[in-house]
Image (cartoon, rainbow, N blue to C red; front, side, top):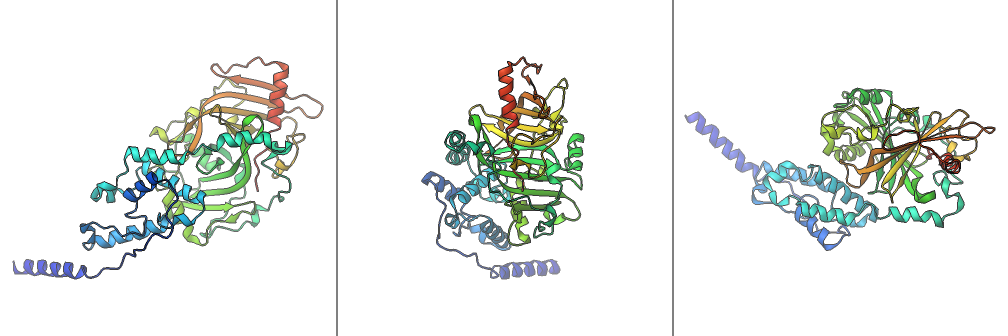
Length: 456
Protein backbone atom coordinates (compact mmCIF):
# COMPACT_ATOMS: atom_id res chain seq x y z
CA UNK A 1 0.00 0.00 0.00
CA UNK A 2 2.87 2.32 0.86
CA UNK A 3 4.53 1.52 -2.46
CA UNK A 4 1.36 2.36 -4.38
CA UNK A 5 1.11 5.65 -2.49
CA UNK A 6 4.72 6.50 -3.30
CA UNK A 7 4.15 5.75 -6.98
CA UNK A 8 1.06 7.95 -7.05
CA UNK A 9 2.91 10.78 -5.31
CA UNK A 10 5.80 10.45 -7.78
CA UNK A 11 3.42 10.61 -10.71
CA UNK A 12 1.68 13.63 -9.21
CA UNK A 13 5.02 15.37 -8.69
CA UNK A 14 6.04 14.60 -12.27
CA UNK A 15 2.70 15.93 -13.51
CA UNK A 16 3.19 19.17 -11.57
CA UNK A 17 6.75 19.58 -12.86
CA UNK A 18 5.54 19.01 -16.41
CA UNK A 19 3.26 22.03 -16.12
CA UNK A 20 6.36 24.26 -15.96
CA UNK A 21 7.94 22.71 -19.04
CA UNK A 22 6.10 24.86 -21.50
CA UNK A 23 7.70 25.80 -24.84
CA UNK A 24 6.12 28.89 -26.32
CA UNK A 25 3.49 29.09 -29.06
CA UNK A 26 4.41 32.31 -30.90
CA UNK A 27 1.62 34.85 -31.16
CA UNK A 28 1.82 37.76 -33.58
CA UNK A 29 -0.48 40.33 -35.07
CA UNK A 30 -1.77 39.54 -38.54
CA UNK A 31 0.77 40.63 -41.15
CA UNK A 32 -1.40 40.18 -44.22
CA UNK A 33 -4.65 38.27 -43.92
CA UNK A 34 -6.27 36.47 -46.81
CA UNK A 35 -8.13 38.73 -49.24
CA UNK A 36 -11.76 37.61 -49.15
CA UNK A 37 -15.24 38.99 -48.40
CA UNK A 38 -16.19 39.52 -44.77
CA UNK A 39 -18.49 36.48 -44.64
CA UNK A 40 -15.65 34.24 -45.85
CA UNK A 41 -13.13 35.74 -43.43
CA UNK A 42 -15.58 35.31 -40.56
CA UNK A 43 -15.93 31.59 -41.29
CA UNK A 44 -12.16 31.17 -41.40
CA UNK A 45 -11.67 33.10 -38.16
CA UNK A 46 -14.37 31.10 -36.41
CA UNK A 47 -13.43 27.63 -37.62
CA UNK A 48 -9.81 27.70 -38.79
CA UNK A 49 -7.84 30.39 -36.96
CA UNK A 50 -7.28 28.23 -33.84
CA UNK A 51 -4.56 26.40 -35.77
CA UNK A 52 -4.07 28.21 -39.09
CA UNK A 53 -3.25 31.73 -37.89
CA UNK A 54 -0.75 33.64 -35.77
CA UNK A 55 -3.35 34.01 -33.05
CA UNK A 56 -3.06 31.88 -29.91
CA UNK A 57 -6.45 30.39 -29.06
CA UNK A 58 -6.27 27.69 -26.41
CA UNK A 59 -9.04 26.30 -24.28
CA UNK A 60 -8.24 25.84 -20.60
CA UNK A 61 -7.75 22.10 -21.03
CA UNK A 62 -5.32 22.71 -23.91
CA UNK A 63 -2.97 24.32 -21.38
CA UNK A 64 -2.57 21.11 -19.37
CA UNK A 65 0.54 19.05 -20.01
CA UNK A 66 1.21 16.69 -21.74
CA UNK A 67 -1.74 17.66 -23.97
CA UNK A 68 -0.21 21.11 -24.45
CA UNK A 69 2.77 19.63 -26.27
CA UNK A 70 0.47 17.82 -28.71
CA UNK A 71 -1.60 20.93 -29.29
CA UNK A 72 1.52 23.03 -29.82
CA UNK A 73 2.90 20.57 -32.36
CA UNK A 74 -0.38 20.53 -34.30
CA UNK A 75 -0.60 24.34 -34.32
CA UNK A 76 2.97 24.89 -35.50
CA UNK A 77 2.56 22.23 -38.20
CA UNK A 78 -0.74 23.78 -39.34
CA UNK A 79 0.75 27.27 -39.49
CA UNK A 80 3.67 26.06 -41.57
CA UNK A 81 1.32 24.51 -44.12
CA UNK A 82 -1.29 27.29 -44.20
CA UNK A 83 -1.37 30.54 -42.25
CA UNK A 84 -4.38 32.76 -42.94
CA UNK A 85 -2.70 35.62 -41.05
CA UNK A 86 0.10 35.83 -43.62
CA UNK A 87 -1.18 34.35 -46.87
CA UNK A 88 -2.43 37.76 -48.04
CA UNK A 89 1.11 38.61 -49.14
CA UNK A 90 0.98 35.87 -51.78
CA UNK A 91 -0.52 36.28 -55.28
CA UNK A 92 -4.30 36.14 -55.58
CA UNK A 93 -4.11 32.77 -57.37
CA UNK A 94 -2.14 31.27 -54.47
CA UNK A 95 -4.69 32.54 -51.96
CA UNK A 96 -7.57 31.00 -53.90
CA UNK A 97 -5.63 27.74 -54.28
CA UNK A 98 -5.26 27.61 -50.50
CA UNK A 99 -9.02 28.07 -50.10
CA UNK A 100 -9.75 25.34 -52.64
CA UNK A 101 -7.50 22.94 -50.76
CA UNK A 102 -9.19 23.94 -47.50
CA UNK A 103 -12.66 23.27 -48.93
CA UNK A 104 -11.58 19.85 -50.14
CA UNK A 105 -9.98 18.98 -46.82
CA UNK A 106 -13.21 19.97 -45.08
CA UNK A 107 -15.65 18.12 -47.32
CA UNK A 108 -13.53 14.95 -47.28
CA UNK A 109 -13.42 15.02 -43.49
CA UNK A 110 -9.67 15.55 -43.12
CA UNK A 111 -9.97 19.03 -41.58
CA UNK A 112 -10.44 20.07 -38.88
CA UNK A 113 -8.57 17.09 -37.48
CA UNK A 114 -11.07 14.58 -36.01
CA UNK A 115 -9.16 14.49 -32.71
CA UNK A 116 -9.32 18.30 -32.56
CA UNK A 117 -13.04 18.33 -33.26
CA UNK A 118 -13.66 15.80 -30.51
CA UNK A 119 -12.58 18.38 -27.93
CA UNK A 120 -13.44 21.53 -29.91
CA UNK A 121 -16.85 20.91 -31.54
CA UNK A 122 -17.25 24.66 -32.11
CA UNK A 123 -14.65 24.41 -34.91
CA UNK A 124 -16.89 22.19 -37.04
CA UNK A 125 -17.64 23.76 -40.44
CA UNK A 126 -21.38 23.66 -41.06
CA UNK A 127 -23.01 22.77 -44.35
CA UNK A 128 -24.07 26.38 -44.76
CA UNK A 129 -20.55 27.67 -44.11
CA UNK A 130 -19.06 25.22 -46.60
CA UNK A 131 -21.63 26.34 -49.18
CA UNK A 132 -20.61 29.97 -48.60
CA UNK A 133 -16.96 29.13 -49.27
CA UNK A 134 -17.83 27.25 -52.48
CA UNK A 135 -20.09 30.04 -53.72
CA UNK A 136 -17.28 32.54 -53.25
CA UNK A 137 -14.77 30.42 -55.18
CA UNK A 138 -17.00 29.89 -58.30
CA UNK A 139 -14.47 27.65 -60.07
CA UNK A 140 -16.00 27.85 -63.54
CA UNK A 141 -16.48 31.61 -63.84
CA UNK A 142 -13.64 32.03 -66.33
CA UNK A 143 -14.57 29.21 -68.71
CA UNK A 144 -17.08 31.13 -70.79
CA UNK A 145 -14.63 34.00 -71.11
CA UNK A 146 -11.97 31.61 -72.39
CA UNK A 147 -14.37 29.99 -74.85
CA UNK A 148 -15.42 33.36 -76.30
CA UNK A 149 -11.87 34.72 -76.40
CA UNK A 150 -11.00 32.62 -79.45
CA UNK A 151 -12.92 35.00 -81.72
CA UNK A 152 -10.55 37.79 -80.69
CA UNK A 153 -7.35 35.80 -81.17
CA UNK A 154 -5.22 35.49 -84.32
CA UNK A 155 -6.09 32.81 -86.85
CA UNK A 156 -3.28 30.62 -85.49
CA UNK A 157 -5.10 30.22 -82.19
CA UNK A 158 -6.19 26.70 -83.16
CA UNK A 159 -2.61 25.69 -82.48
CA UNK A 160 -2.48 27.43 -79.13
CA UNK A 161 -0.99 24.36 -77.54
CA UNK A 162 2.18 24.85 -79.57
CA UNK A 163 2.79 28.58 -80.01
CA UNK A 164 5.42 29.86 -82.37
CA UNK A 165 8.82 30.35 -80.83
CA UNK A 166 8.43 27.49 -78.39
CA UNK A 167 11.77 25.84 -77.56
CA UNK A 168 12.56 22.47 -79.13
CA UNK A 169 11.98 19.36 -77.03
CA UNK A 170 14.58 18.79 -74.34
CA UNK A 171 16.25 15.46 -73.74
CA UNK A 172 14.25 13.76 -71.00
CA UNK A 173 17.35 11.80 -70.01
CA UNK A 174 18.99 15.09 -68.99
CA UNK A 175 16.15 16.18 -66.67
CA UNK A 176 17.43 16.55 -63.13
CA UNK A 177 15.95 14.25 -60.46
CA UNK A 178 13.67 15.64 -57.79
CA UNK A 179 15.21 16.72 -54.49
CA UNK A 180 14.12 13.41 -52.94
CA UNK A 181 16.12 11.51 -55.57
CA UNK A 182 13.16 10.47 -57.75
CA UNK A 183 13.93 10.46 -61.47
CA UNK A 184 11.39 11.40 -64.13
CA UNK A 185 10.50 8.26 -66.08
CA UNK A 186 11.59 9.13 -69.62
CA UNK A 187 8.84 7.09 -71.30
CA UNK A 188 5.86 8.60 -69.43
CA UNK A 189 4.58 10.32 -72.59
CA UNK A 190 3.81 6.92 -74.13
CA UNK A 191 1.75 5.58 -71.24
CA UNK A 192 -1.97 4.86 -71.52
CA UNK A 193 -4.77 7.06 -70.22
CA UNK A 194 -6.08 6.50 -66.70
CA UNK A 195 -8.39 9.51 -66.74
CA UNK A 196 -8.61 13.22 -67.50
CA UNK A 197 -9.56 16.22 -65.41
CA UNK A 198 -10.96 19.66 -66.12
CA UNK A 199 -9.70 21.79 -63.23
CA UNK A 200 -11.72 24.94 -62.65
CA UNK A 201 -9.86 25.75 -59.45
CA UNK A 202 -6.56 26.47 -61.22
CA UNK A 203 -7.74 26.69 -64.85
CA UNK A 204 -5.84 23.68 -66.17
CA UNK A 205 -6.62 20.59 -68.22
CA UNK A 206 -4.96 17.32 -67.27
CA UNK A 207 -4.14 13.87 -68.55
CA UNK A 208 -3.51 11.21 -65.94
CA UNK A 209 -1.43 8.40 -67.46
CA UNK A 210 -0.23 5.08 -66.08
CA UNK A 211 2.62 2.74 -66.87
CA UNK A 212 1.95 -0.85 -67.93
CA UNK A 213 1.90 -2.18 -64.37
CA UNK A 214 -0.55 0.53 -63.27
CA UNK A 215 -2.85 -0.24 -66.20
CA UNK A 216 -2.81 -3.98 -65.40
CA UNK A 217 -3.66 -3.18 -61.79
CA UNK A 218 -6.65 -1.09 -62.91
CA UNK A 219 -7.96 -3.81 -65.20
CA UNK A 220 -7.65 -6.44 -62.46
CA UNK A 221 -9.08 -4.19 -59.74
CA UNK A 222 -5.81 -4.42 -57.80
CA UNK A 223 -5.63 -0.76 -56.73
CA UNK A 224 -6.42 -0.93 -53.00
CA UNK A 225 -3.49 -0.76 -52.52
CA UNK A 226 -1.71 -0.19 -55.81
CA UNK A 227 1.09 -2.70 -56.43
CA UNK A 228 4.77 -1.83 -56.14
CA UNK A 229 6.09 -0.59 -59.47
CA UNK A 230 2.90 1.21 -60.48
CA UNK A 231 3.57 4.72 -61.78
CA UNK A 232 1.07 7.53 -62.34
CA UNK A 233 1.88 10.70 -64.31
CA UNK A 234 -0.33 13.78 -64.17
CA UNK A 235 0.32 16.22 -67.03
CA UNK A 236 -1.16 19.72 -66.83
CA UNK A 237 -1.69 22.49 -69.37
CA UNK A 238 -3.19 25.94 -69.05
CA UNK A 239 -6.62 26.43 -70.61
CA UNK A 240 -7.03 28.43 -73.78
CA UNK A 241 -9.90 29.12 -76.19
CA UNK A 242 -10.31 27.13 -79.39
CA UNK A 243 -12.49 26.92 -82.53
CA UNK A 244 -16.22 26.58 -82.00
CA UNK A 245 -16.14 27.76 -78.40
CA UNK A 246 -14.07 24.88 -77.06
CA UNK A 247 -11.47 25.12 -74.31
CA UNK A 248 -8.29 23.26 -75.17
CA UNK A 249 -4.79 22.73 -73.72
CA UNK A 250 -2.53 25.74 -73.98
CA UNK A 251 0.96 26.00 -72.55
CA UNK A 252 2.49 23.03 -70.76
CA UNK A 253 2.56 23.62 -66.99
CA UNK A 254 4.04 20.55 -65.32
CA UNK A 255 4.20 16.81 -64.98
CA UNK A 256 3.75 15.14 -61.59
CA UNK A 257 4.84 11.58 -60.91
CA UNK A 258 3.76 9.07 -58.27
CA UNK A 259 5.83 5.88 -58.01
CA UNK A 260 4.63 3.07 -55.72
CA UNK A 261 7.26 1.30 -53.61
CA UNK A 262 6.18 0.44 -50.08
CA UNK A 263 9.68 -0.23 -48.75
CA UNK A 264 11.60 2.57 -50.46
CA UNK A 265 8.99 5.25 -49.74
CA UNK A 266 7.67 3.97 -46.42
CA UNK A 267 7.92 7.43 -44.83
CA UNK A 268 5.79 9.06 -47.57
CA UNK A 269 2.75 6.77 -47.64
CA UNK A 270 4.47 4.18 -49.85
CA UNK A 271 4.72 6.57 -52.80
CA UNK A 272 7.60 8.46 -54.33
CA UNK A 273 6.51 11.96 -55.31
CA UNK A 274 7.92 14.24 -57.98
CA UNK A 275 6.98 17.35 -59.89
CA UNK A 276 8.75 19.01 -62.80
CA UNK A 277 7.54 22.41 -64.01
CA UNK A 278 7.87 24.36 -67.26
CA UNK A 279 9.26 23.37 -70.63
CA UNK A 280 12.69 22.93 -69.06
CA UNK A 281 11.17 20.48 -66.52
CA UNK A 282 12.70 22.12 -63.48
CA UNK A 283 12.32 20.09 -60.25
CA UNK A 284 9.78 21.55 -57.84
CA UNK A 285 10.54 22.97 -54.42
CA UNK A 286 13.75 23.97 -52.72
CA UNK A 287 14.67 20.72 -50.96
CA UNK A 288 13.40 17.21 -50.27
CA UNK A 289 10.87 18.62 -47.82
CA UNK A 290 8.54 19.41 -50.72
CA UNK A 291 7.07 15.88 -50.38
CA UNK A 292 5.31 16.97 -47.19
CA UNK A 293 3.17 19.22 -49.37
CA UNK A 294 2.28 16.19 -51.51
CA UNK A 295 1.44 13.83 -48.66
CA UNK A 296 -0.56 16.49 -46.80
CA UNK A 297 -2.63 17.29 -49.90
CA UNK A 298 -3.34 13.58 -50.50
CA UNK A 299 -4.15 12.83 -46.87
CA UNK A 300 -7.96 12.94 -47.38
CA UNK A 301 -7.75 10.00 -49.83
CA UNK A 302 -5.42 7.86 -47.73
CA UNK A 303 -8.14 5.21 -47.78
CA UNK A 304 -7.75 5.07 -51.58
CA UNK A 305 -4.00 4.55 -51.20
CA UNK A 306 -3.48 8.33 -51.47
CA UNK A 307 -4.77 8.48 -55.08
CA UNK A 308 -7.38 11.09 -56.01
CA UNK A 309 -7.93 9.89 -59.59
CA UNK A 310 -10.87 7.62 -60.44
CA UNK A 311 -9.50 5.36 -63.22
CA UNK A 312 -11.74 4.87 -66.25
CA UNK A 313 -12.43 1.14 -66.29
CA UNK A 314 -15.33 -1.26 -66.70
CA UNK A 315 -13.97 -3.31 -63.80
CA UNK A 316 -15.85 -2.53 -60.60
CA UNK A 317 -13.88 -1.92 -57.42
CA UNK A 318 -15.48 -1.43 -54.01
CA UNK A 319 -16.29 1.09 -52.78
CA UNK A 320 -17.74 2.35 -56.04
CA UNK A 321 -16.19 5.83 -55.82
CA UNK A 322 -12.72 4.34 -56.42
CA UNK A 323 -13.14 3.92 -60.20
CA UNK A 324 -15.15 5.57 -62.98
CA UNK A 325 -17.19 2.84 -64.69
CA UNK A 326 -19.62 5.29 -66.32
CA UNK A 327 -16.92 6.75 -68.56
CA UNK A 328 -15.80 3.29 -69.69
CA UNK A 329 -19.25 2.30 -71.00
CA UNK A 330 -18.40 2.06 -74.71
CA UNK A 331 -20.23 -0.79 -76.47
CA UNK A 332 -18.22 -3.76 -77.71
CA UNK A 333 -19.93 -3.34 -81.10
CA UNK A 334 -17.74 -0.35 -82.01
CA UNK A 335 -15.18 -1.11 -84.73
CA UNK A 336 -12.39 -0.18 -82.29
CA UNK A 337 -11.97 0.31 -78.55
CA UNK A 338 -10.09 3.63 -78.48
CA UNK A 339 -9.70 3.98 -74.71
CA UNK A 340 -6.74 1.65 -75.03
CA UNK A 341 -5.02 3.95 -77.55
CA UNK A 342 -2.67 6.83 -76.80
CA UNK A 343 -4.28 10.22 -76.04
CA UNK A 344 -3.32 13.12 -78.29
CA UNK A 345 -5.24 16.07 -76.87
CA UNK A 346 -8.51 16.98 -75.16
CA UNK A 347 -11.00 19.81 -74.99
CA UNK A 348 -14.04 20.97 -73.06
CA UNK A 349 -17.27 22.61 -74.29
CA UNK A 350 -18.56 24.66 -71.36
CA UNK A 351 -21.93 25.44 -72.95
CA UNK A 352 -22.85 21.74 -73.15
CA UNK A 353 -20.86 20.54 -70.13
CA UNK A 354 -19.05 17.97 -72.26
CA UNK A 355 -15.42 16.97 -72.62
CA UNK A 356 -13.66 15.07 -75.39
CA UNK A 357 -10.36 13.24 -75.85
CA UNK A 358 -8.67 12.61 -79.18
CA UNK A 359 -6.98 9.19 -79.30
CA UNK A 360 -4.78 7.80 -82.07
CA UNK A 361 -3.36 4.41 -83.01
CA UNK A 362 -0.10 6.22 -83.82
CA UNK A 363 0.67 9.48 -82.05
CA UNK A 364 2.79 12.26 -83.54
CA UNK A 365 6.46 12.14 -82.67
CA UNK A 366 7.69 14.10 -79.67
CA UNK A 367 7.51 17.78 -80.53
CA UNK A 368 5.17 16.97 -83.42
CA UNK A 369 2.66 19.46 -82.09
CA UNK A 370 4.74 22.17 -83.79
CA UNK A 371 3.87 20.84 -87.21
CA UNK A 372 0.83 21.45 -89.41
CA UNK A 373 -2.18 19.14 -89.62
CA UNK A 374 -0.99 17.89 -93.00
CA UNK A 375 1.56 15.18 -92.48
CA UNK A 376 1.04 15.12 -88.72
CA UNK A 377 -0.39 11.59 -88.79
CA UNK A 378 1.05 8.70 -90.75
CA UNK A 379 -1.15 7.08 -93.41
CA UNK A 380 -3.22 4.29 -91.88
CA UNK A 381 -3.50 6.05 -88.53
CA UNK A 382 -6.97 5.87 -87.01
CA UNK A 383 -8.12 8.78 -84.85
CA UNK A 384 -10.97 8.52 -82.37
CA UNK A 385 -12.67 11.50 -80.76
CA UNK A 386 -14.59 10.30 -77.68
CA UNK A 387 -17.05 12.77 -76.12
CA UNK A 388 -18.50 12.48 -72.61
CA UNK A 389 -20.81 14.51 -70.44
CA UNK A 390 -19.01 15.92 -67.41
CA UNK A 391 -19.66 15.34 -63.73
CA UNK A 392 -18.15 16.88 -60.65
CA UNK A 393 -15.15 15.02 -59.30
CA UNK A 394 -16.33 13.53 -55.98
CA UNK A 395 -12.79 13.81 -54.61
CA UNK A 396 -12.00 17.42 -55.53
CA UNK A 397 -14.21 20.50 -55.49
CA UNK A 398 -13.41 22.57 -58.55
CA UNK A 399 -12.70 19.61 -60.85
CA UNK A 400 -14.79 17.77 -63.42
CA UNK A 401 -14.24 14.33 -64.90
CA UNK A 402 -15.79 12.27 -67.74
CA UNK A 403 -19.18 10.74 -67.08
CA UNK A 404 -21.42 9.08 -69.70
CA UNK A 405 -20.06 8.65 -73.27
CA UNK A 406 -22.08 10.60 -75.85
CA UNK A 407 -20.36 9.80 -79.14
CA UNK A 408 -17.29 8.27 -80.75
CA UNK A 409 -16.03 9.66 -84.09
CA UNK A 410 -13.42 7.79 -86.12
CA UNK A 411 -11.21 9.26 -88.84
CA UNK A 412 -8.89 7.00 -90.81
CA UNK A 413 -5.98 8.88 -92.37
CA UNK A 414 -5.58 7.76 -96.00
CA UNK A 415 -2.54 9.80 -96.94
CA UNK A 416 -2.04 12.66 -99.42
CA UNK A 417 -3.71 10.82 -102.32
CA UNK A 418 -6.76 9.59 -100.45
CA UNK A 419 -9.63 11.23 -98.62
CA UNK A 420 -9.96 10.65 -94.87
CA UNK A 421 -12.69 8.23 -93.90
CA UNK A 422 -15.15 9.46 -91.25
CA UNK A 423 -17.63 7.46 -89.16
CA UNK A 424 -19.71 8.54 -86.18
CA UNK A 425 -21.39 6.45 -83.48
CA UNK A 426 -23.66 8.18 -80.97
CA UNK A 427 -26.15 7.61 -78.21
CA UNK A 428 -28.40 5.89 -77.48
CA UNK A 429 -27.67 2.87 -79.66
CA UNK A 430 -24.11 3.70 -80.77
CA UNK A 431 -24.94 2.43 -84.23
CA UNK A 432 -23.15 4.09 -87.14
CA UNK A 433 -24.92 7.34 -87.97
CA UNK A 434 -25.68 8.54 -91.47
CA UNK A 435 -23.74 11.74 -92.01
CA UNK A 436 -24.01 14.15 -94.93
CA UNK A 437 -20.80 14.29 -96.94
CA UNK A 438 -20.42 18.02 -96.25
CA UNK A 439 -20.86 17.50 -92.50
CA UNK A 440 -18.43 14.59 -92.54
CA UNK A 441 -15.78 16.77 -94.23
CA UNK A 442 -16.25 19.46 -91.58
CA UNK A 443 -15.83 16.99 -88.75
CA UNK A 444 -12.80 15.42 -90.42
CA UNK A 445 -11.21 18.84 -90.77
CA UNK A 446 -12.00 19.74 -87.17
CA UNK A 447 -10.54 16.49 -85.79
CA UNK A 448 -7.43 16.51 -87.99
CA UNK A 449 -6.70 20.13 -87.06
CA UNK A 450 -6.87 19.61 -83.32
CA UNK A 451 -3.33 20.37 -82.22
CA UNK A 452 -1.67 17.71 -80.09
CA UNK A 453 -1.21 18.92 -76.53
CA UNK A 454 2.26 20.35 -76.13
CA UNK A 455 4.86 18.27 -74.34
CA UNK A 456 8.31 19.48 -73.30
